[in-house]
Image 1 (tube, rainbow, N blue to C red):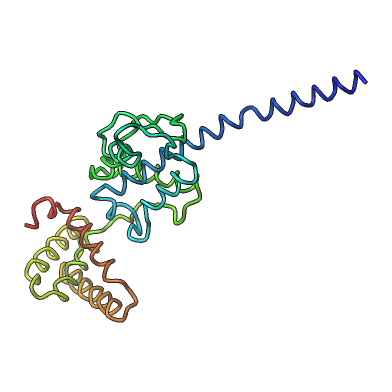
Image 2 (image 1 turned 90 degrees about the horizontal axis):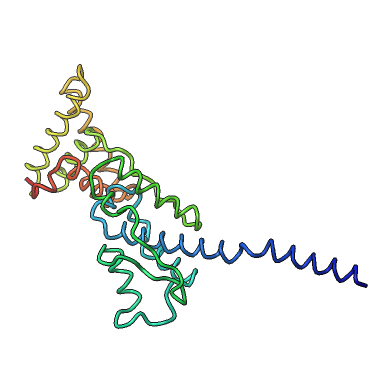
Length: 244
């Protein structure tokens, strides 16, 4: 009888020993969910995210953030005073708060980490790649799809085609668009010595016409062209120069 009692007691201790890390593991998961929710919202407030993240228009960053908040019960059940959780969250995301308390009993405290929003807006490709990689890690950890990825590098030739197409579609902007198309072609020629300008200009027109037909036939969204133009404006600094 005593032997059976001891065996049962040891078995219970073994179960408790294996079970004890579970709460700590759960807290780590909830804390990471909080970090990822903040990252999604930081990216949402970025001015360059639509140019840096591939397929940005199809990704609802706000929805991903709040899915994590509700699923992992990150919104505190008790009041934080005069401010609401949403206000505290927005202040933290915007860099106006030094910490953020999460969890139903405010048992998780987030401290600021690497400035993801600033990295996306920096124009530095290495920093942007690092920021997108952190967002992709959140997607994979919590099962969001599509996984956020870096937008493909935009070539000077791509920009020349986009500007040519803008001029073809919008007569009011034709002069400006032609000027910028020539600028992009000049950059392309500098990067590809030995290339003939006439051949490049001809190919730009051919590719522009083909893309225009796809847009008119509904095979390609005009939003994609607008996104390309926005990235070209940023690439050449026209956006910062006020469109000059």
